[in-house]
Length: 363
Image (cartoon, rainbow, N blue to C red; front, side):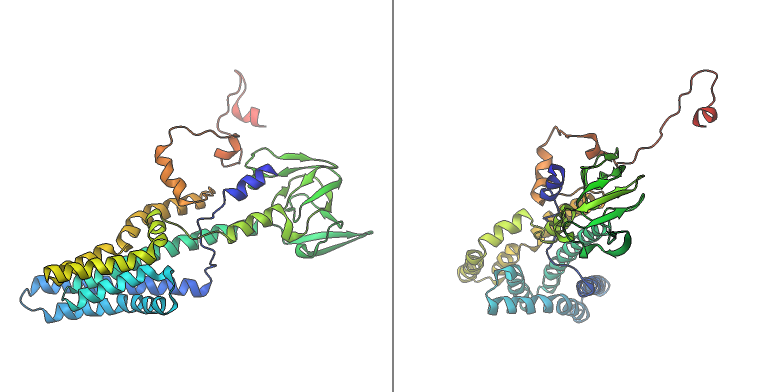
């Protein structure tokens, strides 16, 4: 049980609590398409400016199209945030102010680039969330969905979710164990590496506890149900994963904490600079620099890449802050070898004694 608790506590709390359904995937697809179109508009405008340096109308048209594609969604979210007083949209509010100022001051390239960077950051985050959801779905499939219920001399295949405490089930060789329970008849070896990381099978006999999410290897056993499907250790791990928090990047955590002071402060500084210098471009520069989207992209890209790579390899990281702290670690202590192995034993070398061939030894 200690192993199970450790797995749960070191779960993917960095992943979003939102389950990306088809709607979420369509949203991600739209963001990718709009970002690609905006990039095409940007490069087309730059190309036209290079080929026809004295003609500004066509490049401006391309920049404006890209600005509208990427900027309108940001403006919509920002307006909703203003009316709902939702500080979770504070970044979009700052970006909206900056891109409007850039556009009407004639800096069309910057007006396009700022929301484009924000969009790229969102794409990276949501793609990582989808990868995390794939990991959770893969774990869910490890739990057996059906069970063989024993009632007198009758055996009936039932949905594992309908099992009640005290009922008896038959687990055949090669079958997954659907529920947490105690062996009351028979003995077997159980593959528990999916939960404990131990490569060697655990021997189970009468009186031993077996867990959902593990696999019965070679013996036929009868198990008395001790926990219902929703209360198994494996189900609790999945529940923790699904209730996990959003990916939290250090810089955005700080900004979110002080956002209700940050936005008025930035606007006041920009207004003061504009009044003192009579140069609107300096005020715009302050607004653009104040947007955390660029910093978010620089910091989130390696974090998200590390989290995604880890989850695909079966490593569950609790929070992105632990990835940062890895740079300061010079020694790591593991409690068992199963933690750092794939859990599948394999033959790597054959060394027969003199006079015996490898074929003879294997046979």
